[in-house]
Amino acid sequence: MDETALRVMIVDDEAPARHRLRELLEDCRAAVPLAVVGEAQNGREALDMLHAVAADLVLTDIHMPGMDGIELARHLLKLPRPPVVMFTTAYPEHALAAFEVHAVDYLVKPVRIQRLLDALQKVPRLKPMTFEKLSQLPTASRRFLSVTERSRVVLIPVEEIIYLKAELKYITIRTVQREHLLEESLTRLEQEFGARFVRVHRNCLVARDYIRGFERRANIDGDAHWEVLLHGILETLPVSRRQQYVVREIGRDVINGKAA
Image 1 (cartoon, one colour):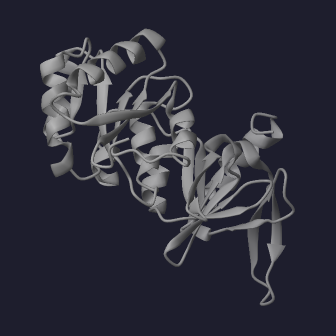
Image 2: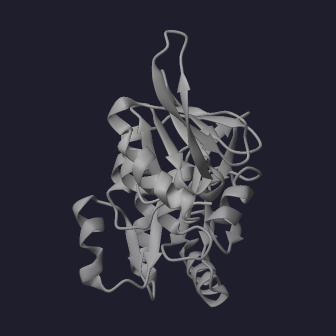
């Protein structure tokens, strides 16, 4: 492969769409030296492949099962050298207003060769999209949080997270198996996943499904406070005075079997 060639990865859950895009890229090679380094059916598969092969450009569909294109783009920012991402979509034009406002590149299906060629020619001048820009696009909550460990992007399914705790500049992600460290804002995570997590302290969000109850305890000074009892781990978490309403509201649901 020519070392100056643009390395492109195609991500789409529909095989005919991937095939058409590969053919169009082949037709563009005379004007823009390029090589297709891989094809994936969804975002998770693409992320796995990008640990083994490098790409300068990822052409990804937006709507895909498992992990959509916008979530993929957010996780790709954790790679040592994030690729440029362009979205391919069958969205009607009026639904793409947010993409226009935030200057996010996209190609409307069926992709036309001249539009694709124009996009390819400007890739060397582009930088990866920022996390903030991607966060403002219309999409569902992420299915995964991602952390970088030993130069690899590790995905943690949100449904497996017991709690998120802010400590210094990091967020501790706790699952049954282990802890991970994440660099994100606890407030922003609460806004994104507020239906799944509840704030029990100014520095801690707990997954409602992992709360098995509350227990009244006293500290060494004799002051009484509530602690959250959790499924899957022995650790307990303090409930701040400001958040004690959680004990009444969720505690009632636990007793009734709704959060068990």
